[in-house]
Image (cartoon, rainbow, N blue to C red):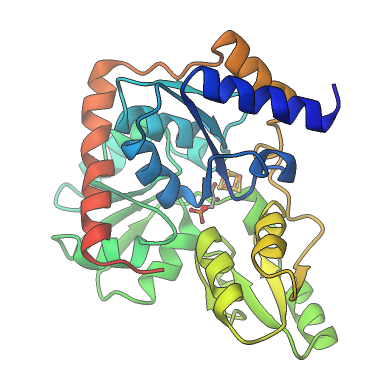
Length: 308
Ligand code: 13P
Ligand code: SF4
């Protein structure tokens, strides 16, 4: 089937089945084009908690679809490609977090939303890249266990005067971008603004004019008067950047800025997901109950102070 035919068939089924198609900002352009809603991890989790649809088709990676299921346990949540995982989320297990908590029993556990459901269930509050600083600031303790992203953790640490025990995880896609590449691009494009995601290593973050979530980058580049931007995050964001600011120039900081997991989902997978109700996210009621609290607490805390 041709792209247009696939897209039309998907849209028809979405309507027929009273489904909603959510796509993360890193998804392939042809998927973002037909999504009902696109956004960063925070926006998508809020949207997933509010939808009236019977079926949520989540084009992203597994932890995102799991979060949607946790927030909407009565709905069918489908992850079109069962192999779309997040290597960073897999860098900490529930057993490892249990052990860490036993070493620091008085610490408050802030878990980046990029965690598996059984790990989330052991955290006190979740955060995303858009609200991590405010969540840690607002946490009711001066001792924080922050999991699993060491880069986001060290970014947050700059803004808070708290003891932070930071897990040694990282996003392979963002961590493998080095300051040398950015310096070359900056030298070649002295009129460009460098914007990056806080999952980048600290030496890269230090070179940035603006550090924010994927949707934060889309908003910032739209509102900022500059005309040229070096983009320090995954390639999929280029679709939204060009759509939102067609008159501006965007330079991806590296050709290697591709998350293989975010790219696994193809239009064919989305069509099959709707035709065959696959791959359904199933979590035990006990995990849903425990993991719901930190996610809901994050949404409550973020609505109190919105930081983008
Ligand atoms: P945000 O879209 O929340 O900025 O997250 C990026 C990410 O790495 C998701 O996997
Ligand atoms: Fe995970 Fe990084 Fe891919 Fe996001 S970009 S899904 S953090 S591996």
